[in-house]
Amino acid sequence: MALKYLLVLEVCVFAAFGGLSDLFLDKEWEEFKRIYSKTYTKQEENRRKSIWLKNIDIINKHNIKVDMGYHSYRLGMNKFGDMMSNEVTSPMNGSRGFPMFNSSMFLPPGNLRLPYTVNWTKKGYVTPVKDQGFCLSCWAFAATGGLEGQHFRKTKKLVRLSEQNLVDCSKENLGCTAGTPENALNYIARNGGLDTEVSYPYVGKNGRCRFRPTEVGANCQGIVRVPAGDELSLQKAVASIGPIVVSLDASKRSFKQYRNGVYDDKACSKKLITHYALIVGYGEFQNKKYWLIKNSWGTSWGMDGYMMLARNQDNMCGIANQAIYPSV
Ligand SMILES: *[C@@H]1O[C@H](CO)[C@@H](O)[C@H](O)[C@H]1NC(C)=O
Ligand SMILES: *[C@@H]1O[C@H](CO)[C@@H](O)[C@H](O)[C@H]1NC(C)=O
Ligand SMILES: *[C@@H]1O[C@H](CO)[C@@H](O)[C@H](O)[C@H]1NC(C)=O
Image (cartoon, rainbow, N blue to C red; front, side, top):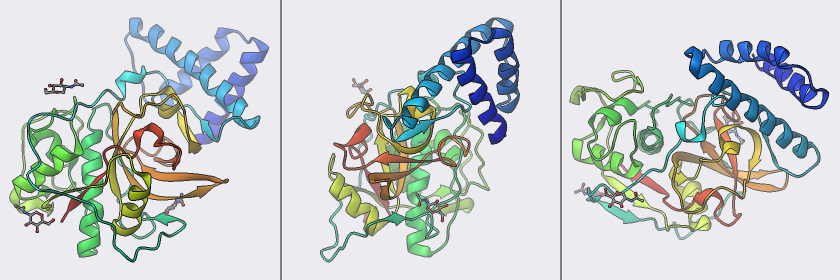
C-alpha cells in the first residue's frame, strides 16, 4: 500500500511538471478511493476530487522544499486528502460550566534530572494507536491515553480504556461534536471509573450510555495541571510522570497531511485549541528538539500514528497551553 502510494506521488510530481492529462490522474483517483474505502454520490465526487487534486499539489510542492532544505518535515497523502480541514478538527470550546472538583498543580520532584530523551511507549505505558474516525472525539482519546498511562504507572497493567463510554456518557462533553479531556476525567472521577475498551468498544457515533460498573478498567481522583505555556515544566512532567494530555492547534492542512520529521508550521495557532492528543516523550532528531505525540487518527497518519512536534520553539501550536494528567 505504501509503495503504491509512493508511486502515485511520483507520478503526480511528474504530472505537475509534465502536464499530463487529467485522464491519467483519474486512474490515481480511483486508486485513492480504493485504498481509503471512499464512496461518494456523483455530485459529491467532483468536489472531493478537486480538494484531492489541490492537496496533491500542496504535498508535492512542500516535499520538494524539504529536499531543498527549507522544511524539517514531510507531508504525504492519507485518508484526509479529500477532506476540508474543518471536517477533521474544529475549535474545541472547553467551558461547559462543570467545574473540576479535584484539581491540583504539578510540582516537579526536587531531585529531578531531565533525561535527554524520553519515550514512554518503550516502557509499556502506551496502548496501540487508535482511530477516532470521523467523529470529533479527540478529547476522549486524549483522556483515555492519559489515564491508561497513569493506571499502568500505578498497577503495571496496561488496560485499553473505552472512548465510547466517554462519548456516550459524559454529559460535560458534546460527544462527536466537541469536548475536553478535563471534562472527561471529571466524569470518570464522579462516575467511579471508566469501562474497558473490550467491554465497550468504539463505534465513533453518539449513542445511549451503556456504562457497566462491573467492566471498569481504571479510575481517577481528579486532574493535575502543568503550568500553562511553560515547556520546561511540561518537559519535567513528561520525564517524571509519564504521558501527558495536551491541547493544540491541528487545524492546518500541513498537520492533516503530516508524514514524518519534526513538524513546525509557523502558521499554526498558539491560542486556538482545535485538537487534543497525548505527549508520550521527547527528544532530538536531526538537531531539532521534538515532543513525541501520540495521535488518534489511526496508523496511516504520520509516523505510524505518531508525530514529532517542535519543542522549545516558542510553544509551537500551543502545545503547552493546557497540559494535564489524571491523578489515580
Ligand atoms: C464557550 O462556551 C461558553 C459556554 O457555552 C460560552 O460562554 C463561550 O462564549 C464559548 N466560547 C467560545 C470561544 O466559543
Ligand atoms: C518510541 O518507542 C517505540 C516502541 O519501542 C518505537 O517504536 C518508536 O520508534 C520510538 N519513538 C521514537 C521517536 O524514538
Ligand atoms: C483528590 O485527589 C487526591 C489525589 O490527587 C485524592 O487523594 C483525594 O481523595 C481526591 N479527592 C476526592 C474528593 O476525590
